[in-house]
Amino acid sequence: MTPNQTDRLATRFIQFLVLIVVLILLFLLGDIIISGLPHISWHFLTSPASSFSAGGGIRDQLFNSLYLLVLTLIISFPLALGSAIYLSEYAGDNWFTSLIRTAIEVLSSLPSVVVGLFGYLLFVIEFHLGFSILSGAIALTFFNLPLLIRSIEGSLHAVPNSQREAGIALGLSNWRTIRGILLPMALPGILTGIILSAGRIFGEAAALIYTAGQSAPILDYTNWNPTASSSFLNPMRPAETLAVHIWKVNTEGVTPDAVSISAGSSAVLIIIILLFNFGARAIGNRMYKKMTGGK
Amino acid sequence: MQVYDLNKNHIVTPPGEIALSTNQLQVNYGNSKQASMVDASLSFPRFQITALIGASGSGKSTYLRSLNRMNDRIATVHGEIMYHNTNINSPKVNVYEVRKHIGMVFQKPNPFAKSITENITFALKAAGITNRQELRQRVETSLKEAALWDEVKDDLNKSALALSGGQQQRLCIARSIAMKPDILLLDEPASALDPISTAKLEVTLKELAKNYTIIIVTHNMQQASRVSSYTAFFHLGHVIEYDQTETIFQTPNIQATHDYVTGNFG
Image (cartoon, rainbow over all chains, first blue to last red):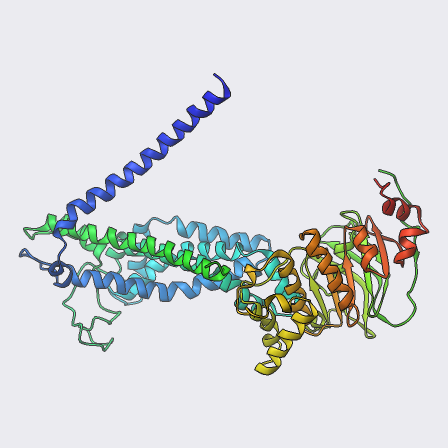
């Protein structure tokens, strides 16, 4: 074979592999959306789930998922930001730093069921938090931390060293340089990281079954007092999320329309996660353009 | 490569006022036993341009970066750096204050991803200058001194990243001199610029030397001979010769210097 022919053969083969990946993805997305879309209606999105009769919706589950996401980010973002700044800007190259890095690696590879059971034993039972959004948010923080730390650290790392030197040479302190120069430059990457990790949180089920619980008490969306047990803002109430709802409807659902509820919920879940992904890209690009002054 | 006697040197002390001097400066990177810079003792005349020349790895950039303590976290620096009768290489000295008096411009232009104005005002604000009138004044003066004012005065709010390389480098100079430093250190400031931008930069430097003491590292020997009044030749971590630029380029005292400036080196 001539070099030209080998090259063409290799290219074709690689293209074939890529095609398989794309086909798998398209098949999955297409199947979920096509079978779920007909069941999505305004009524489906805005009415509470029913346990036995047909015609239930996913209003509370959808809200729970979003609320849990916000709470998780409130807990995990400051922790991740601090750790990432430490690892990228202050940590020396020594055994301690590599210990931290290894710990983060291990954290990110923990099976979610294990984290769920751990959260159940520690937060739900030991700390008496009960099945609650708070327990769920803490458990999800465990997953979210490694992802967030790595993406923020990566964004900080991508800022050229010459920027640090420029700041230091002007008599600025390390912290001032980080806050005023490095973080703004890393912001598009950080935002993208947050949104992508949000997708992961949104779709998580196993860890939540044992921590946030599987029941969705009727919520009162007019009660803004977070300490009231029926208030939608109460972080101490059990909360079934959309992903958990899909699992539950499929394993123990007794409603006659369980199949269509599951299909509709799956489609909603996938669509929201897709929106997160596209949103991340759009915001990242837009901020990058704004930062670099291209119009 | 020809071997020269590194201990044979010829170093003069310029007459007149001295802005900065080093005494037996030695630099070691990391835990390396091998010093990257050995016993450099040089005096820099005030309001003059001094060029540091030498091959790659000769230690000239290492030396320059030690002068405003930029090597603090990277290398160990022994010896004295005397500035206004103070040894600024002492661990007790406030390095942030030192760097406000001894500014630095780097090889590659490194403006912040901010507007032209903010590039200059950011460090000023951090240093506690908040008066808007004063800030505006400093922006204008420093841009004029760096010969950039006429090109950017109409869009000071434009991102600095939209400027050309030569303009960015002059903005970096403006950013440095807005802090009103005494001394300006330049580390091969023209190596990333085209010949026209380089020529402009050299004119700017000569103009700046009226008010600032400038120490410039350069690979370009024509540049050294064009802009500087004193030149130091570095080789393998040693200062081989330091004298008036004319002497270095026309009648050097050491064979190594002669070979380097005539291009018969290595």
